[in-house]
Length: 443
Image (cartoon, rainbow, N blue to C red; front, side):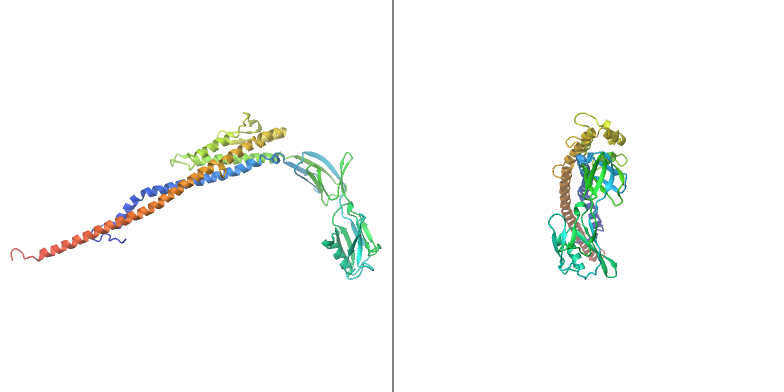
């Protein structure tokens, strides 16, 4: 609604209305301030909840048996590799390479052009794997190119690989080898009638790999990989592992990895505790409390995390290097922890990694009860705050409507005032004119 600001009264009615509206809007401003404050609390709680979820994941990982039995495998010879898998155990042994696994090869004597017919009267050849069931292989046209194609065709499943080697311009010799290594990969390739193909072949026999482990023990493998040479321990011979190469294989407990994992868990717990302390602290300078001050769910989380350090049987983890520091955080003496683990791996694993009552399990349980998406105490607190913010925002919107109506009312009132004053001024001017037109008393 348009207003006649100060037309008759000389008052800045628009400015007066704005000032009155500021007073009227004070309750709404307080609501907006509460919304901002609540949203700050929600943001802080969400950040904390994310840290707790991360903590739960790390703690749960340390309840797995694999986390407490990591092994480090080394080989003194770079050409001999060693890896470990589930089931491996600490061990130390030496190996001496007696032989490497090789493919079975035939190098044919006579050279031919790719288009020359090399299979004789028939376009087929005989592949004998020495298993009592020779295979007839159709080459199509009997040419050298057709023979190579037939050997390499996956549909024929020969298990062989054929190559032509150019020994002179347009003249080739045939090389055929088994795809797999091992002594059992031997084969022969002849014309269909059994006569030599391409002048016969020079044979390089396939062989198994073999390792001497001492004490009369020799291990063999059809490939250069000795899978589970010891349970969970695999040894692989590289190209440089020639006959006579020796290596000392050592599989030992990786105490550094266990210690690093425990330190990471402690650091993550401390990250949560520090975040709680920082967000809950009172600032004496600004005389304001942190956004998480007074949050019961947060206080309970802090208390429960510290209590999780103490085993339910009343014992202590201090002997294994873990205790509560004076500042209310956890302190891990990594040297003491590593020494305890080396001295008694099973005992330390039981204290820290037991899936039902170890430290990691207790921390994981506390984290889950706090951050669980359905029943977590932090989750419930965040949801409650969000609902409260929604209600506050609805109230702010209601105030928008109420204030707009109030402004309209004030504008009408001031407009009516100006109109009335204007009418009174007009009447006053008319009366003054009438009085001025009257004859004077002396006339």
